Length: 355
Image (cartoon, rainbow, N blue to C red; front, top):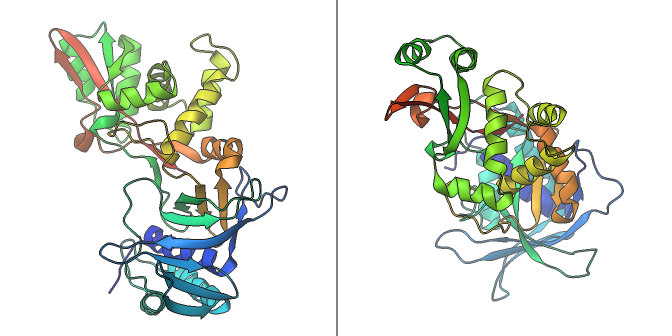
């Protein structure tokens, strides 16, 4: 029996909803329907599960599932697909289980369609592969799309790890201060530790701990590691949680003398890169993995999309919808002052989650 959390079942829901509707409406930065743009027509959904042949699911009044050789493996009325999507949506929102749960009726319907896993394996950030009709060019490109859902716990945009640690040198520190800082164990210990350090010492960005993440950020902007380090210091000092708050304070103070709008522009590029292809541990080429864009499952079940053409709108959404988050200090090795060759340092960790 298939089991998954809300986010995983949301991907099945998005699959069924898109297949039933045969189109996806575009979103604005507030996740409302963008009425100025036409809906994105979906020709087919392409699915290839491990050790299984590739299946194309063609939208229409009669949904058809075909193998590459043209053989039909299923034909279902779109109304039935829509009803199954609605049934799954109700199961997801009514589930009180925090972890994985089963939806037997949906699994039966998935078997009917030749779907045997909650999601197809992916080596990149795409969760669903769609062939759309591009109303701007007249072409029918095949693109990977990332799916994010509001039905479960807010997903991460950038996952924490040892790869996302930033190293800060502590000027004016001593053995006594180090012991005093590391002894702080309050419910807000990181904020309290940084507050004490900034009162007694000076924190200076030294480097990104992982060279690949440093390289990837410099591909976006050669100065971006310094910008992010400053943003993180503001977050851990309690100046804000939302990415938009932190960027606004950087803009207001013009921390690096770059002028108005520069901080927001660069930060949006980083968030967009993180959403569409860039990860901290893997060397990034600068190309998008999710070449179609982003599919959003709203909490009311509405499925919307940010097409790659609406990148500006997508970047606005990312800035307004993401926040800094503190991950596990013990798991990722940060938050303690340490000494190396007579110098004192502290690691701070970067994790960004949707609000």
